[in-house]
Image (tube, rainbow, N blue to C red; front, side, top):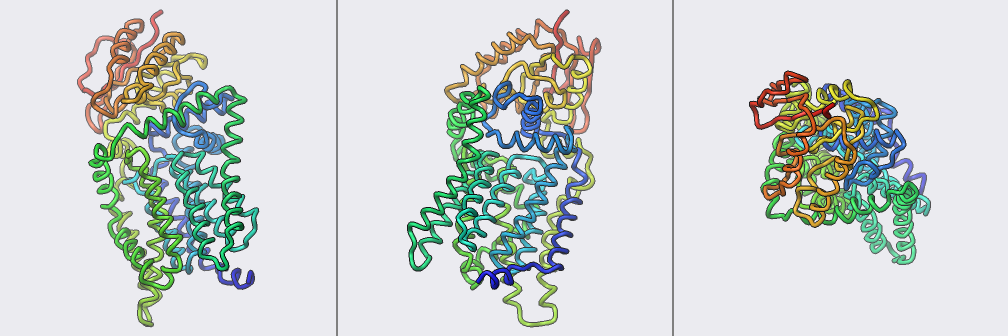
Length: 536
């Protein structure tokens, strides 16, 4: 039996050649945007990783509801590729290339080589789409890397029936959860898939199936348990638990589906437009699950995978662009299945081998062509503005450069606003663990206590620099926010002298004023950042 399976799953040299060409395509798709300015989440991950490389554990001097796996992953990326935006995006490119290979290997175990190659090519294009912020090193990329590796090992375990493989699958799936809580959806998929496979297996082996599921869950718990032990020994377990579970539970209840439905419609439309023909073909693949022999053979896998992929997007009813990344593997599998179904349905004519290839190339090329300006032509400021509006991501580097040149390594800086990327660029420690202002402004029971704690931390740290970000997007994600800390910041800034004014006037025009020039000038725009230095 193993010989037959090995023969069935053997991959010829021409297939590896095509996969290599797809990986070259990944490189070309991402090359132009390697120096792109970091956005907030990237800034958070990079800053936390920077602290880790200095020996400071997560949650000790910076608070976030993200699980620590993403910080460890970023620390590895920074150590290998360097502490720059280019280095971070090179790390993302490497992660994406490995994920493309995983998509190919998983699809190969589901069906034939044409489907596997089409699926991997589809994933390469969709996962780089600016429409879902695929060029940004968000946690979703790292979740998928570990989750898909775990699912591949799970499929191997089912074929070999080796218990160690089930445990190994759980280890990888556990790492996906450590990257972000959303990874739990893929753990649930793996257990559900094993359960259903066990039910359909004849004769029914309940005990064997239960053992395999328990082995997967045991593997899942190992990374989380080791992490908890490390954080306990570092003295930050209480803060870790509060931020990643207690506060996170409150966070996902802030928004209701009716409140975020307009956001879902907007984000869905922005995703669908550049991927229209790909999604159309994926819809054919969805039909193939029901109406073709090869599709029905993968009904359980594909059906469950799609359901849990959708569930991974929905926690908190907050539909940011990059959450759609979790849908890309499932859509890619459907795309490949559609290509296989079309190939099988075609009459035996001379162009049978080439027409599906043409469909793949045309649909994927159309998506790239629609987004060509962002992917290949636009300068980094224009790309940042198109993706994130007036958010001060291009300005963060200049602000950090001034702070770094006018402060010592031991000096602390306070950023009143949610711009942790400034901390990373400046390589300075925050005066408060609240590197985001959002929790302080939200409708959640800890907000008042958080405001009090943030103020106390800043006042006790006596930071050398005090940065006030005057952009609403850096403060509140809802309209009925509390202004207490804003009023405090206005008073506290009187202890400092203004040494910088950054006035964001237009999409491509920002005026910078430093030192004496910044002291008295009035900003012209509502989008402005003030930099203050401690009075001497």
